[in-house]
Image (tube, rainbow, N blue to C red):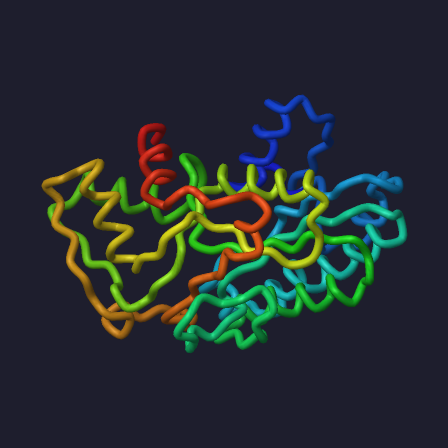
Length: 273
């Protein structure tokens, strides 16, 4: 488990502990994905599984330091994928809806072409290509709009703001699929156990805009808070975001069955904030 103290890494660690699956964890700074010597020193043998939850996730920060984001999300992934390939280990790696440009009219299929709009998406798309080029066994899971009862994420931010303020303005022209980190870890584990390899998409079922997502959060934790829609142009950010980044779940649902809705998973998370 790499990046075991992050939002997704914690979900994975708790899952493996519940399942009584033997596992080792690595966290920064003791393990640095950009340090080749750390990656090469991983004690891997054939049949091992490496779950990589280590990533640069600061979308706007990547605009200021694309080299830093690329070092983690692409260069480090390439070295890790090569290390796993040589050892005969399977690499579970995560990517993002931001490898797409948001111009689609239907959910993005697993084989859709990369067309990132910003530095973060470029770094993740390059990481995917480095993973493929290594030629080893992998499970690449693209996901989107990650949230959990812990860590820095949209749900916790909006819940706190709604409790403290009378009104909020949230963009209503970006559409995607929220994803519970705990659901993502569990679905990834089930895919791994099923022998699935290659590219998959895992999110909560359903889709919404950030405004609709925020409205559901505020209604649950602070009904008196008014949530108002705005455009992305009214809320400028350093990095461009795709207007439509809904990921197609067909392959995953054919293997695992229907994904739980974002409303159901959100309700579960909100009860534990």
